[in-house]
Amino acid sequence: MGLLYHYTSFQTLFEIVKPNKIIWLARYYKYFSKKDYEWIRNEAQPIVQEICKENSWWFDPDFQMYRPYIISFCASRNSKYMWKYFGNDGHGINIVINEDILRNEATLLSKVPALLVPCEYIKTRWTKKGLKETIMNIANSESLQECQDDDRLLYATMGLLKEHYWRQKEIRYVTIEQKIAEVNYDDGDIIVIPYEVPENQFNKFVDFPKELLNGIILGKEASQQDFYKARKYLISCGYSPDIIRKQK
Image 1 (cartoon, rainbow, N blue to C red):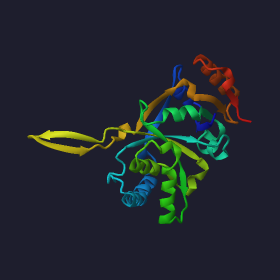
Image 2: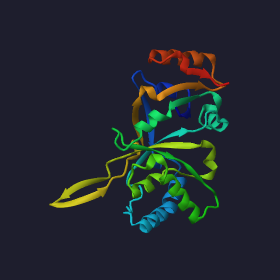
Image 3: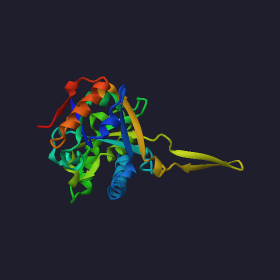
Image 4: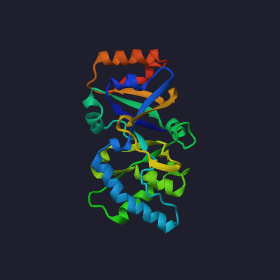
């Protein structure tokens, strides 16, 4: 069984873990650093278009037509960087999840269509050839194989990050906003308006089965009171007290 990790604040435990399910907050792609968003859009789009042209694949000029929402997971079990910047400097928690269950949930046939996208980190002095190879590496990952060719490329761009994020060792759960346009009628004329996600809808909640949770690790700086509070809460949700422990 593979494991993935999510470093966060202590209080987030009570928002994510529920008696009958796990509820995770997915954030709209544009919520992330605007500079990174614009960089990926501006630099990756022409390369995706070029790859589509070379392979006679259809290319959608609306590069973000899927309106992606992202939940971030980490491949590192005990990362000092992640504890510092995401785990409240050791006062927070590390939520351990069952990667196999997550992969079963992350399919286009799920109730909430989604895919797992492995992230690749682009060097500051990147080349067009290197970025093209990176996009194809992500697109050819096993988790994206159920997509059509052009769709795989669009999902792959969700896994492009700048080099200084490499310590995050991120794997992204990417779900989509299926509404892509609004249709209005004006004196018999059909007017199609591309759908833009309102800023007050930049968050989206996704439900997962209770079995997704494998464990909870409290940071070194978390108090004994926090440990007992979390343990009591997990028991009340029907989990074994053995799934919680303190970071050594």
